Image (cartoon, rainbow, N blue to C red; front, side):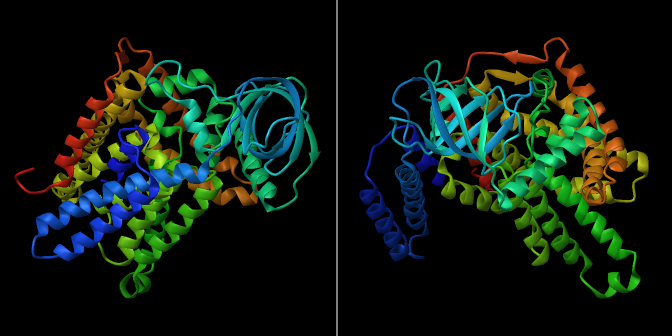
Length: 494
């Protein structure tokens, strides 16, 4: 209901001011509590409408609080200065700078400006003050009705203009505070990884460890997308879950080697605390993007469930994470990242809740090693199938494309990622302070080569992708409501 209210605002179905929304929300809350236990159906009905109003109000407040100034018209190359907020490295060695506190002659101050820089002598870092001559223009809108709206996306990021440089970048003043040190730390980590593993595998390894994807060949990124492996490129729930899971089970195994500790102390809870701190460290090292923050919230809730002896994996976990994100950044609802990741997670949690116990009982039982391997393969196939079906409507709506052999690619790549690559990432992070990261990066590259080979092979198969006209927004909304209806209710009348 919170998301429904946000969606109603963003798609302009109704226009209401902030004060009527606040009054309606408070009124509905009072009525719901007054009705109380006497009429539970009415109580939940009023609460549902209240949350719709809350979602609308949250989105309305978010837009009003941002009020990003936007450049009115295109400007010919002009000298400008500002402070570096973010640096993105392209495959060809060029960079894109996000500048804040920009000073543009004759133009009112803009919050952020994106500029593509072709020539620079020294790599700029966050906090550096720079000067450059660049042409600027307002962020472009959708190329056709209902197409991806780049202007709206960057507006929520505070970006009021985009442009290109026509002169070399001049660094006026270096920033010497902790932000620059940390930004340099991440950049040096990525460079050390690429030095240890040359080629595309090094670029992929740097992306998985630090979140810096600069320099990745477009042909590799396209192959990963067409093979259904694009989720491996963005650090999100998969990576955070695998890393924290590796640390959790490794710590628990290490504690259980001592009979005294295993029998007298809650070593499982100790392992959960250690894995939580490992996830926090990975969050900062990988750049703390929105998908990574979302994954970290969910992982922490899982470990809180372990600490409090409560069921960790449930739809409540998904609901808490989604609610936190929607309240802080309601615009995430209309982004493909939020939609696809939560669709996959909801589908997997629902299936796990209803069928997981029986499957895990067979997997953990007295069956032989061969039988467990079969169950593992079947489980991987079934998991990939559920996730692919869950994200298919969103892929159709946003990309007009469906990946047909994602099951095959994930069946090969996911076991390699989970059982080989991610453990070596943990070892790499442990060895890197001692300068011994190459001992772990080299064997990790073997797994990355398998993943890349799988991506190229599967994406090159005849009919690997199916391109069709985009589905209508109303159809997507109906699919989402129907899927949530089947997922949330547990009674027979669902």
